[in-house]
Image (cartoon, rainbow, N blue to C red; front, side, top):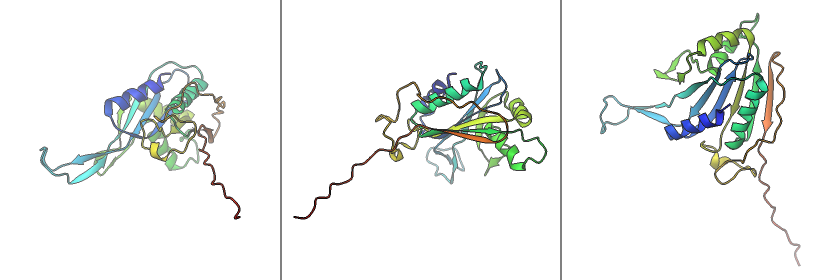
Length: 217
């Protein structure tokens, strides 16, 4: 799956730094996967559309949800693609959440909202501004399927192209905040049975040498 290529093309097109990236899929082969990019930045809101007009408020830049239609037959293929993208973009780790369908008896109401958010189908606006801009024509069908069958979501924070470079204490990164492929970690097979979280840890803290203390003469 060309997840890394889609992320990099979006970064190049917008010129904006990323806060985080999520990927959502239902456990059904050959269904679309939803990639959501969460940007860092604000949009100036003016009373009149004039260059010299002062901004009266600022709204967060909406996230971008994209539908990926590449064929896949096994969730491990999606897992590997998410890991490869996170590895090359310098993420400290990848967290994979397995979630049951929210239509089951006794499911908390918050699970339905989490399912919508995972697939970029935010049900409301914040202060009149959209939370996400979606280019995912099959999102509603995927949400319906996820509500019945459950879904998986991967989340990571990229150093390359993100806002985390100055905070990254990671000995595995290049100066540009990248890592050379391939990702050396093996995927853990998802069970798709109830709630489960798997974290793939990539980063290694930089070891700083302690000062040498010489005994007094």
